[in-house]
Amino acid sequence: MNAFGQLRGLTGRQWRAFTASFMGWMLDAFDYFILVMVAGRLAEAFHTTLTVIATGFFLTLAFRPVGALLFGLMADRYGRRPALMASVLLFAVVELLTGFAPNLTTFFILRAIFGIGMGGEWGVGASLAMESVPAESRGLLSGILQQGYPLGYLLAAVMNGFAYPYLGWRGMFMVGAIPAVLVVFIRMGVHESPAWVEERTRPKAPGAVSGIWPAIRANWPLFLYMVALMTAFNAFSHGAQDNYPSGFLEKARHLPLRDVTRITVIYNIGAIIGGILFGALSQKIGRRKAIAMAALLVLPMIPLWVGNGSAGTLAVGAFLIQMAVQGAWGVVPAHLNELSPASVRGTFPGLAYQLGNLGASFIPKLEPMMAEGWGRGWPFALGWVVGIGAVVLAAIVFLGPEARDARMSADGADPQPHGSPG
Image (cartoon, rainbow, N blue to C red):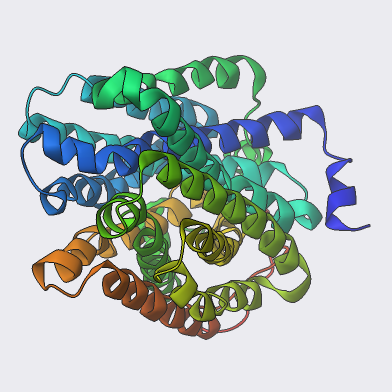
C-alpha cells in the first residue's frame, strides 16, 4: 500500500495527536512570521533601520534552544501533552503582549521570551506526532507536519495583505494570541504518546541510560552531528525566508504591498507542495537522499528568484525555491525523531534542532549587513547565503546516519542508525 493509502488506516486517536502537533507548529510559525511581514513598517514606527529590527529575529532564534530544553524535559518527565499545551500558551500570550510594547527594548525582550515558547513547541509536537503514527506513514506525515510552518507563513502574509491597513503592526501581533485556543483542543481531544506511556511503565533495564545529559554523553557524536545538520538547515531556510519580503521585494524591488502579499502566498504554496512530496519520497529513497536532492535543486533557481524580472517571474522563482527548501525540511521531523534515543525523544531532537537555530541565528542580520552595510545589494546577499547553504546542507546530510522506519518505542528494538556517525 502506498503512503497515501496508509493515511486511511489512521485511527481517530492518531489523527488528533497529529492534528494537534500540526496546528501547534502552524500557529507558532504564524506568530513568528508576523514580524517578518511587518519588519519594514516596524522600523519606521521605532525610527530605526531594518538591520536593527532584525535583532528581533536573532533573539527569537537564539532563545529557542532554551525552550527546547525546558519543554523537552517537561515532555520526557510529565508527558508530551502538558508540555505542548504549556509551550503554545507561552508563545501565544507573549505574542499578545508584543502588540503593547512601548519601546524597542521591551519589544526585543518579548521576542526573546517568544523564542522560548517557539523553541519548545517543535520538539514536543514532533515527538508526539511521530510517536503516534505508523512507521510506514511516517515519511508522508513528516512532510505534512513540517508544512505547518509555511502554512503559518502563508496565513501571516494573507493577514498582512488584507488586515494590516486596519490593524496596524500592533493589532497584527495581538491577533497572534489566537493559538491559545489550541490548548483547549489538546486538553480535551488528544491522548498521550503511546511511546511515552510505554517508557514510563516499562521496568528499566540494568545499565540503561536515563536523562538528557547522560543520553547526550552516550550519543555525543550523533548529537553533535544533528546540531551541525540543523545549523545548516536553519541557515538555509531563514536565509531564504526572513528578509525576502521586506528586504528584497519591498526595499530592493519597490513592489507594492499587494504584489508582496501575492508572491509570499504563492511561494508558501510551493513550500507546502514540496514538503509533502519530498517527505513522501523519503519513505522510498531514504531520508538523506531526499534532503540532499531537494537542497541541490535550489541552485539553478536562484537567478530567477532574485533576478530583475517582473513580479510574475519573481513569483515563479520564489515558488520553485521554497518548494525545494521546504522539500528538504519536510523530511526533518521523521529523520530527527528516528535518530533520537526513545527515552529522551521529547528533548533530544528538539534541542538539537534549536541549537542549530542558535548556530544560524546570525543569518537574518548577516543578509541586511551584506546588502546594505557592505553595499552589495539584496540579490547578492540572498543568492550567496542560500546557494552556499544548499551545498553545505547536502554535504553534511550525506556524511550522517539515518534510521528510516525505526520503531519508536522504548523496548530496545529500534534499528541502529546506518552511516556515520552511528
